[in-house]
View 1 (cartoon, rainbow, N blue to C red):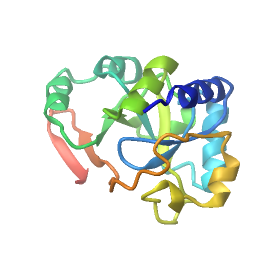
View 2 (cartoon, helix red, strand yellow):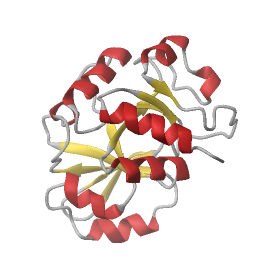
View 3 (cartoon, one colour):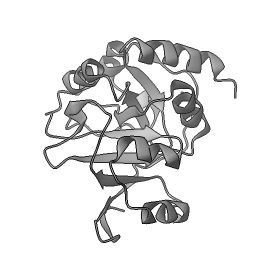
Amino acid sequence: MDFEPDIEHCLNVLKHGGLILYPTDTIWGIGCDASNEEAVQKIFLMKRRPEKKSMIILLADPRDILKYVSQPDPRIFNYLETVEKPTTIIYEGAIGIAESLIPPDGTIGIRLVKDVFCRHLIKRFRKPIVSTSANISGSPAPRFFDEISEEIVNEVDYTVHYRQQDKTQHQPSAVVKWNKDGTVTVIRS
């Protein structure tokens, strides 16, 4: 499980505004520095995705939510301790990320990752990383690396080698919206 060379290559690409193709705790994703507007725009162009359709960011530590969500409800941290399945939570009050990641309602989808590769990458990068499925908008999300189109592979600046042969079934994350009253609205289970 030596993914150090992949981490080094990813860090170099992310620091220079490039795009990576990488395994996450759910499915393979296209990623970039979530605070770099130009890098985020590259993903929208590559995926032929309307900017109105938001993308999520990945974090490695619950405390980092405080950097990217203004005044998060303190109850969210207790809720996060109960979540077992990879879950993207939509928060109000997005801050500190590229403007095009923030829809008009000011929300942001954040997933805390447990995957060892992603955690190492995000902790070493010290910023959130965009995660969006490795496909052109409207096409099915690839379940495995070998289902990713050649077009996507050719357009990113670095493709991670770690887990390319992995055939473990992974699913997209659950998606919930955290409401102001501390309740949760399930969008995708």
